[in-house]
Length: 252
Ligand code: PEP
Image 1 (cartoon, helix red, strand yellow):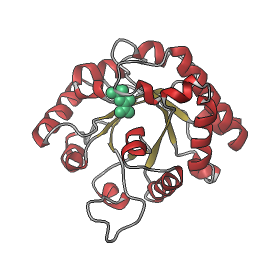
Image 2: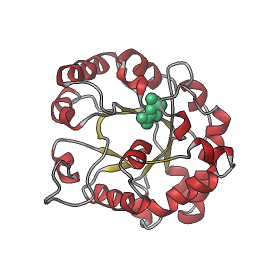
Image 3: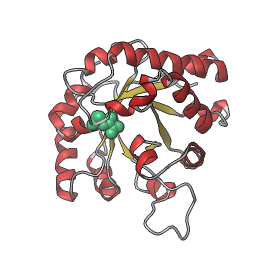
Image 4: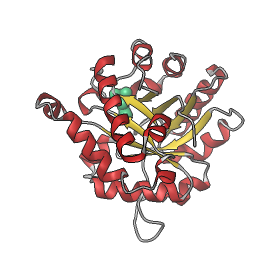
């Protein structure tokens, strides 16, 4: 059985041209100290190959993608397959980011297929879940996240599920500068862990890495990461500056 890991993943979203991406990755490599934290750069597709070479040799620095198609290959113009990602050295794939759910109408059923194909190719899905503001205000956030997880992940066998990383990202906190309080994050993370324990048993639940995402920055990361069930962060805006990103990595 795997161990719970500490992870900080940077989601660059649709930012940085080719040269800018190389510069950012090199800057991060230079600043990063050896540590037990796994650091993931989830870059746009165009960067994957070159950044895979830049981070080679830094054992705790890994390459991530932000999405992939659910089929193996074929007539899906403009799409990128999981096999292609694997072939350029990708280890982690973000699945179900709220921006993809919202702008590309990705459903839980579709996300279940994406999770499957990422696992089949030997990569780790970072499965995102989280509620919109109106859901939290209606006090239905726990139920909504529970359903997202059940619908997209609970078909997995325990030996498949143990490879999953979960990222709880309240939609109202993404890119807004409004972070969930450490208590709000902990409440949801514990709820998720208990849910996993019911489905897969306590041992597997305790071994699952659950990240928090939503306006994490160098100032608030420490308080969030100190929570018992917060195992790191998925970081958007603050991952685009090497200094800030590495400060977040150093916040455990
Ligand atoms: C994200 O993109 O997953 C995210 C959490 O973004 P930000 O840190 O900018 O809120």
